[in-house]
Image 1 (cartoon, rainbow, N blue to C red):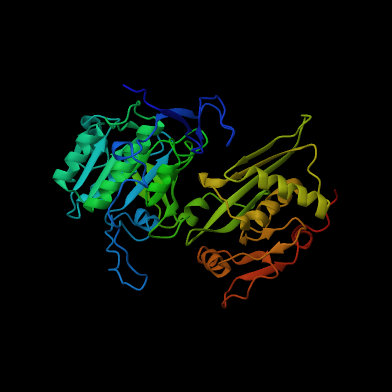
Image 2 (cartoon, one colour; image 1 turned 90 degrees about the vertical axis):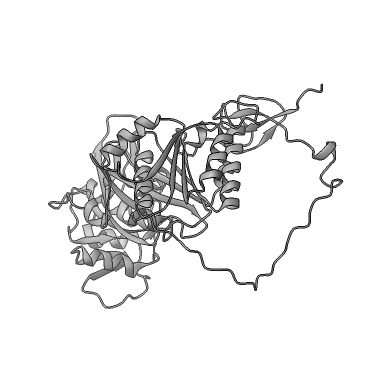
Length: 457
C-alpha cells in the first residue's frame, strides 16, 4: 500500500510548503505551518483533463432573478449589520475574542428568530445542552422554541440538518467540528477548511441559513485558514473591550449588503441590549470642557457616529517617550505627530503621548486625523476646545486638510445631539442649510492658529 502524500500549509496566508518549517517565508509568521493530506488526482488516478465531467449550465447577464427575500431577526442592530435581515441559504461567519459575548448574541438571535415562527437549531461543540439552557434562563429565552444539540461529528450534524430542515442552524464553533474523512485533529487547518466547506455547500443545496462561530487569534484574526472567510457570504466581527460594557458588531464582508456596517450593543446582566443611538451613549459622560478631549463626527458603514477622542501629553522621564494608543492606528498617530512638528513647529519630543477612543470603539477612517491632532495640541497646551464643537477632516503629509465623504450626514448627527459648531477642511462641499456654524481651514497650521493662537515650540 502506497504512502499517503502530504503537504504543509501555512494557516495564516495559505502558502503551500514542501516540508515543515518553523517560520513561513511568505508572511513571516512563526509556528503557523501545519501538515495536511494531498487531495486525490481524480477517478482511477486520472488527471482532471483526462476524466470527463458533466457540462455546466450557463446563463446570460440579461436574465432576471427573483429579489432576495430576507427574514428579519427582530434585533434591529443585527438586521442592520446583515444588510436588512437574513438571506436564505446564506453562510455567516462570526468571530470575536473569547468571552466577548458571541454565544450570548447568537442565542438571543436564535430565540428572537424562533419566536417569529422559524425553525432554529443551535448546535454546540463547546458546551453541554444543560449549560446552554442555563444561559437561556438568564436571558429569559426558556420559552423560545429553539432546538439544542451538543455534537462535534460533522457527518451526524449534516444528517440531522437534512432530516430537520431548519430555517437557521447555528454551529458553535467551527473549530470544534470533526470530519471523519479528514485525517487530522479537530481545530487543524484541514479540519476547519473541510467542515466549513461541507456546511457552506450544504446550506446552498438545501436552502438552510448557517451561522458559524469562529475563534480568533491573538492578532484578532479568525483562527484557521483564511480561505474560510472566502467560502462564506458574510463575515462579522464582535468587538469590544473587557472593561467596557459596549460591544460592536462589524461586517467586514457582506455579499448581500454594505461592508463596515456596525451594530452597537450594551452588555448587561440580562444579556446584550441594543443601542439605538450610540452617539448619545458614547458622549454621555462629557460633563464639562476638558483639555485633550474632542468630539469626532465619524461614519461607520452607513451610520454617522459621534465619539470622544481623548489625549494626554506629559513630560517623560524615559529615553524613548511612550506612545500608547487604544482604538486607533499607532502608525497613523506617528504620522500626525510628525506633521505637527514638521509643518506646524509643535514638537512632542521628550513627552509621553497617550491616545484613547472613549467607549471601546475602534476607528479606522482617515477623517479622524483632524480630531486627533486637535486633541494632541489641546492636551499639550492645556487648552480646551469649545464643548459644543465637532471635528472631522483628513490630514495630508504636507499639512493640508482634505475634505471627507458624507459631510452632511456627519453635521446632521451632530446638530441632532445639540452641537452648534464644526471644524473641517475648507474644500468641503457646501451642505444643505443648517443651524450649525462650520469653521473651515485650508491646512493644519491655519486650524491651530484659529483655535489655539500662536504656539511656542
